[in-house]
Length: 206
Image: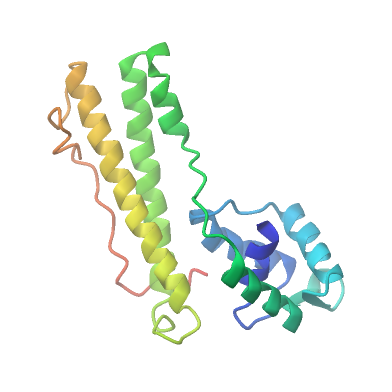
C-alpha cells in the first residue's frame, strides 16, 4: 500500500526528489494514512524504479523521480480493480477508554481533554492544506480530488471532536467532576475553540 501511495503522489505532473516526496507525504498523507519514514521512502522508490514504474534522473541529492507510463497504468489498474475495503480503526483513546476501569475517572477526563486539543490542532493544519489548494481545485484541475479528500478529513475531525466532547461531558456528569455538558453530552464543548473554516486562501501548504 505504501508503494501505491508514493506512486500516486508522483502522478500530479511533477518530478520530485526523495525529500520532496517525503514532504508531500507529510503534508497530505498523514491526515488519512501513515506517512512513511524517510528510509522507507527511498527503499520504496528503489523498488518502484527497479520494477520500471518510476524513472530516476540525476545523481546525489539532486536525484529526482517521476512516474513512468507503466507506473501510471499500474495505478490505473489498482484504482479500477482493488477492493474498496474498510479502514483499519486504530484509536488509542478508544482503547484506553475501554479499559478505563484500571484508572481514575480524572485520568480519562484529562486524556480526552488533551485529545480534543490534538484534534483541533490537526483540523487547523488540514484546513491550511485545504486553503492552499484554492485556485487549482475546480473540476478537471490538478488538485480537485485532493481537495475532496481534505474536506473529507475536515469532516472526520469535526465528527471526532463531537464524539470526544460528548464522551467527556458524560464522564464528567457520571463522576461529578463538573464542567459543561449534561449526561447526553448535548453541550460538551466546555468553552473549547471550534474548528476554523477552510474557505479563506492561505499560502501554499503542499
